Each structure stands twice: as C-alpha cells, then as structure tokens.
Image 1 (cartoon, rainbow, N blue to C red):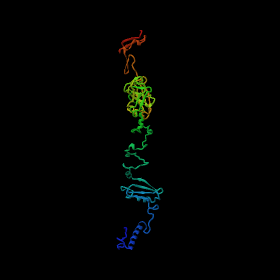
Image 2: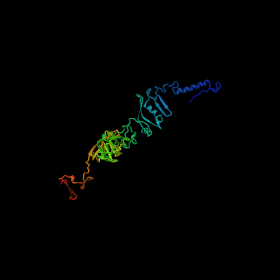
Image 3: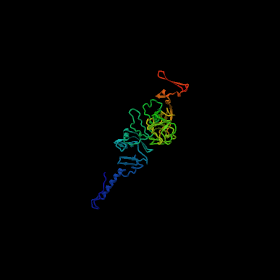
Length: 386
C-alpha cells in the first residue's frame, strides 16, 4: 500500500479537508503497514540491525556512490551459516565485479570473527593484478617452473635489495650449472682485477720521493706534481727528460700522490718543472686501458736503477684520487744493455768500431785483433808499450 496523506484543506475550516474519522483511518492504515513490514503486525522488531540481531551482517556501512559495503565485525558475534553467507554473496549481489562473483569457497570463523577465502578464480585474480594495479603482494611465492610458465619484464631497478642472490659459492664447483649464466658484475670485476693489464711503458721511475707540491686537479684528472726544490730542468734516475716523457712515481711520502705522470713542463733555472697525471691513469677502472686499477702494469725503459723493471699497481678496490694510497710492486726485471766505448748496439747486436779503439786503452801485454765476417784479420792493435 502506498503512503496515505490526510487532506487538511486549503485554509482552516474551509470544509474541504478530511473528516476527523477519515483522518484517523488514514493514520491507522499507515501504521498497520509499518508494523507489518518491520514486525509481526502488532509489534515492531527491535533487533533488526543490532548487535544481538540474527542478521548475518552487523554494523553495515553502504556507500552507494562507490558501490561498496563495509562490514565492521569489531562488536558482537558474527552469526549465520556458510550457506547463508554464500547466498548473500551470490551472483548479482553486492560482491560482484562486472557481474562475476569475486569470492568462492568462503569460510566463516565465528570464533575469531574472520572470513577466509580458500580459493579464488584465476580470472578474478587477474582482474586485480593488472599492469595498472597498485596492489601489494606480501609473502607470496611465484613458481614459474615448467613449460610455458614465466615471469618477464621485471626491471632490476624495480627489485628490492636482496631479491637477487649473488652468492655463486654453491655452484662454483659445477661446470654445467652455470654454462650459460650471466655473471654478477662484482664477481667479474674481482676476477678481472686479479690479472695483469699492460699500459704504455714509462721512460723512467723515480726511486726516491720527489720534492714537489701536489694538486689533485678535478678528482685526479689534471692532477700535478710541481717542483718545490731548486729550479732546474727535470732529470730522474740519471735521465734528462723531455716534454711528454712518462714517469712512474711510487715513492712519494704521501702515497696518495703516487701514480703515472708525464712531463708537462720540462723546467729550467727560472721555471719549475711540472708532472701531470697521464690520461690513461687519472681515473679509476678495473681492467680498463684508459683508467687505473689493480693489476695495471708498467714497463720501465731507462734509468740507472729502474731500467728493465716491470711494476704492477697493487691497490685493491676503488681508488679515490688524492685520498687512496696508490702502491706499486716490481714483478719482473729484465737486463737492459747499452753500448760502451768503441761499441754500437743495434737491436740485440753489438758491433765494434775499430777506429774508436786506441793502443792506450790496452795494456802492454794485450793486443786486439779485428776480424771481418770471413775471419780474416783486418787490424791488430797492440797495447801501449808493446
């Protein structure tokens, strides 16, 4: 029955309104309908939506704007059977997504006021786990093992710390376990650093500390050593150097100033000589021909003490120029020969120059015979007094 309204007329006592009896009938009819809908016809049901109600949902909040229903189970006891709950969540009810039921096989734990979802349709789950989804998964295990199963398009930058296991010790003894695996960068760097990497040879090495002021340039690039002693042309280990000659410096009091330099200013009696870090050693890099790292090797070509020596830079790890101590060690020594009086050296062959030998260079008891390639004596030189 629709709601009935008492006609009160246009103005008071104008004779157009309902009579008193008719008005009373309308009121009674309205109340009868209310009591029938919310009670037994004579008494209202006071427990319709209360903590003691037998209705399976309590403390309901309906958001019609967003089509959501919130259940607050913090008070009272969740009652009802699984069958009743399933009926409430049937197709076409509030628990739908595009007309399909989201939850299946619900378990109601009335003791703890919880609802457990035993199983979900994969199609329904995929509706949530989309490329635009912001859902967070906690303590989930993805098993991609098997034909056709894969997890792809995961950027390393998006992985949290510790997701990738870089420990290779468990498979290090197996030749086939990692036959096609990509190695971790830190592992490769460590192996690469352990080898020998040859750079362009240096002309000389400095066997002692150079009296020079150090400037670190820009983090090592353009770093210099400038003569702080007596002004003169630069000469190291008995060799007068020229512009751009490479020099190994490894005995500085501050080991952070050691390194490979080139002569950028020769200097003289009025100008200080200057050494500048070479471009292939003024930045850090493991196994890099254009950077300095552990295992980099430098051969010394000349010098009274260093000629023929092979030095290796043995500082481990990252080098911060101007701060990290840079050290070198000799790993090989090769004899370097030079021609003396009356001799010439071409490659590995010494030759005698007869015209450069005089009798005064020989004792009275010694004579020197010069032979040609056939063994014929071409000249005999007798010692003085012979």
